[in-house]
Length: 114
Image (cartoon, rainbow, N blue to C red; front, side, top):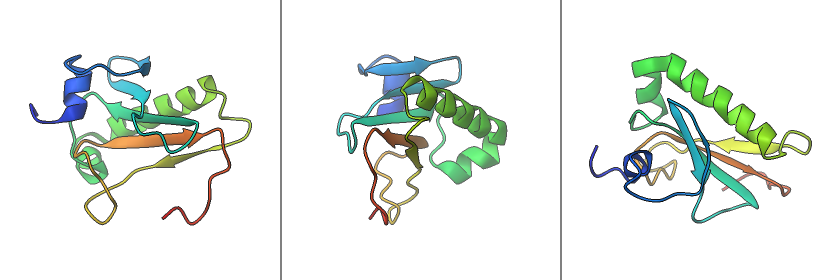
């Protein structure tokens, strides 16, 4: 996926403010944050969206969410809460075609979100 901006971040071709990395998962601060804490959590393997990732490797999705939970704890989001968002497709406002989870916190988040 040479055109994918997140794959370029995984490959260190584009810099990012990384907050977590392991063999399968990378998490970095969003460049356009919508909350005081806004981190994108991605699998290093390219999957276009949640459904594609589940079909290819549901275990990877589970491991990515497990990492996200640890990241939330490390960032101090457990006590007051946080939101995890997955945008899928055009109507879901997915702007990068690489599965990513938005981890948002450190402020009261409104509902409905959009």
